[in-house]
Length: 451
Image 1 (tube, rainbow, N blue to C red):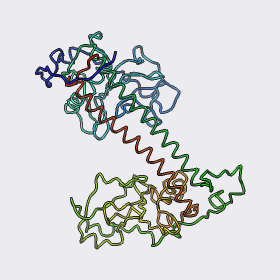
Image 2 (cartoon, rainbow, N blue to C red):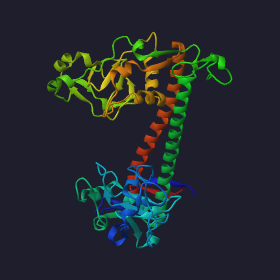
Image 3 (cartoon, helix red, strand yellow):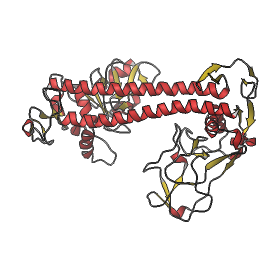
Image 4 (tube, one colour):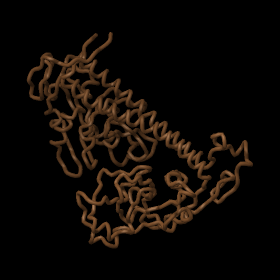
């Protein structure tokens, strides 16, 4: 049977907002119990296996679901008390949040894992009092709705560490459709979730392929037929170099020999008293804005024209490579495309002006951002505070193909990047569609009808 979405015509007032006449508004205290986890003994905790995995707030992802990696997985090597092993299909809620912006407090997941986990304290287990009247998938959606999570966060205690409690959670009221409609709503939104997950998986796969392709292109290059050279089948096409084997018509060059002008890292450090950040004026770029092949201007600040003119050595021109020497963006490079006009920058950004008769700036950016390129530059760091010195940037060696081959390599990489960008845009579109549809379905503004 096919299902269609229709706009609701008959609504009634409720403490939340208008809802369909055949829906209820219920208090969670009458619908669910929330059970605390167990306070396991800290002496048996470990960051490494063996042991049973403890489910902790850090395993809850800000966008929903659970994840486990080397940094957030905790193991327990002691005796396991009865009733502390969680089962798939159970609903779990975060009741303590250490994240800076309270990103996971009140987040609910439906447990589905291929391994067993232990019910640790500060994780609540949600148990419906009337299980035959709730589809757990729908209850999950309601608990994760903006309305419920906003209430949980606004009523939380603590400053650095935020806490909620079963009583505060149970004080919420939520809409409750007939269970048949709950299931249909959950199925529709789950279908969108599956599409988002599939698209995200494709993006991850494409990015992994991109990394491998980048390595091959920057070490083997393309022959006259546009194919990757093969050092095993055609060893005569390669030669030894300080960087290992490279194609025979390539050459190794230090970065300083590719520049039209000296690399600049002069910034505001020597004239800090002059800097006053404004809401408009000349854009001022900071090292943390440098991402791999992207300039993040979300938190862009400005300086006056007067200060800008006093800091001429730190001007940023279209076509400059911006290379972060320190901080969170250490070792990342981006080609400035000029969309902000002439800018200024701090001393943590090296400004590299490439002679385009020798090398293409974007080709140099790809090398600097490659795993191999980053690895070599990071080995040169000797300071206690990680920092890339200007001398090391000058002496950084690159395997350089002829200009025509650089163009062909960049075309392939750009085509690959466009594919990734298209999938990412589609994924974001799906998330926005889900967000809007989820609100309409959970409030009954849009109903699911059999067709």
